[in-house]
Length: 112
Image (tube, rainbow, N blue to C red; front, top):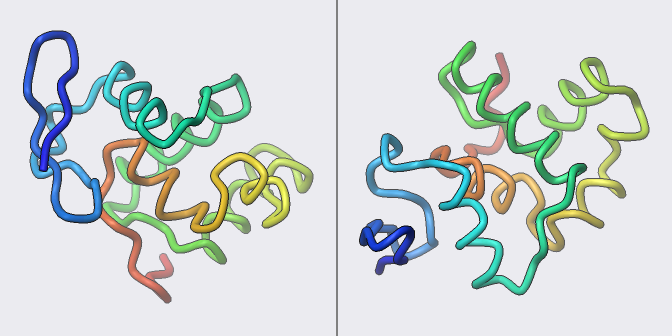
């Protein structure tokens, strides 16, 4: 599978995650969101940038439980709630947010 961003073909796996994480740029997140029918707003970008920083530090894509705890600690309980993340990223918020952030698929129970 693939998506086209800025006249470049970006390869994705069967679940829509980037094959080459180095191809990520904000426009890639926008293209993925467009495909999903999502308009990325400032709260989406806060989570996306948080995830990219988190991955840079821990080298793991957090599952939902870990993400809510880390986000709550960093940005406040309201932004780190499961309800807030689900409102932003729908039925699989950690997976969708990680996909938009160009990270690998989160592994359940992958705590740091």
